[in-house]
Each structure stands twice: as structure tokens, then as C-alpha cells.
Length: 145
Image (tube, rainbow, N blue to C red; front, side):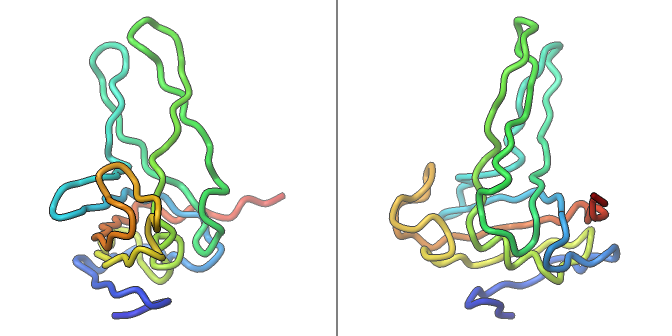
């Protein structure tokens, strides 16, 4: 299927609520370049007591990428808390999540202009096309102001 010039296909059709433009969602995502995971929300952080967590990425569907850049606080082995930036998702994720249902898994072929562009990211070289796998975990109810 196509959306905003992005080619994608659903591996698993979700059964839960639909992610609509403007809704806040939690996902896990993995960017694969030549079969190697280069950027992922599943990069677990080791906590004190040998516990590790992989925090889902939360964002607003259809929003401008990067506006939600909040830092996660993680306790260090020495007992202190530190802020760590979440991995940066590609621009494509903000539009291609629309229409997914909770529990769904979608694979997207991301061209450079919808991905990391002329700069690249981690193991994804500048101007490269890569594969994005998204798993929609939750659609959060809108916050009443």
C-alpha cells in the first residue's frame, strides 16, 4: 500500500483502537539497513539490579518530527538517575502510523527524504533507503486541558 509516497505493508492487522491523525500513540520501532538494526526503540537500558527496560516511543500522529524530544530518566548502577535521549525515529513514522490498529505491525520502505536524509543515522549511511518496522502498542486518550 502507499501513503504520502511511502510503500508499506501490514504484517499483523491490529484489533484495537485506530491511530488517527492527532492522536497520541506508543510504539516500538526498528530501522533496519541491509538486515541490521541501526536505530531501535527496543534498545534496552540497564538499570540497577541488572534489570533492563525498553521504553516505547510516544508521539502524536501527523505531528512535526522531533517536537516531543523528552528525556527518559534512568537510574544508573551507582544509584543516581540520568537523562537519556530516546532514539530518533525517521520522519516517515509520523505519517505512516495513521490508520494502524493497536496490536498491529507494519513494515515501511523508507526513502532518504522520509528517513534520515543527507546526514544518515548510526549505521544508516547518508541518502540511504531502509526498512522501518512499527508495532503499535497503545493509542492514548486525548489529554483534557
